[in-house]
Image (tube, rainbow, N blue to C red; front, side):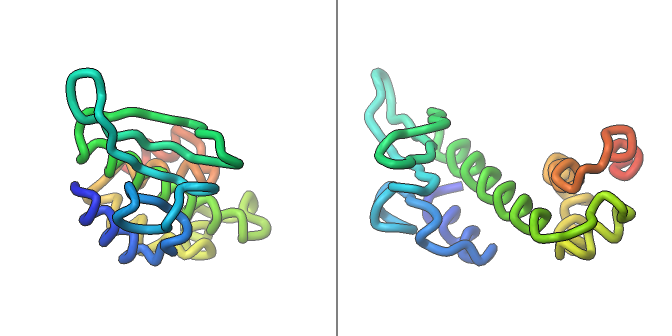
Length: 141
């Protein structure tokens, strides 16, 4: 995945430009108070750094050697944030079945699609919905 492909994917997910910064090419015009991906010259090769900048300081910085890995990581982090936001808006989640949790959070369609193609993302959705590990294993079998 390239920076441009990542930007297109984020647009498809409905992520606002002011939520991310992609080396000044896509997203916001600055990296403050958002997740960012920058390209820099490393000791031996080009490096791709993903971090969150808050009040001028970098947090949770992670460096990658390929553009693809960095883009996939940033996409994963934003998907996780979006999922958590959806779950936080639901009251009474713990008293619901897994299907009710998926429906109420609006994650039913995404889960059904990822269950077939991307079991890691499907498991992530279930964990965020506070489904226990034994149940996750049974559901994703």
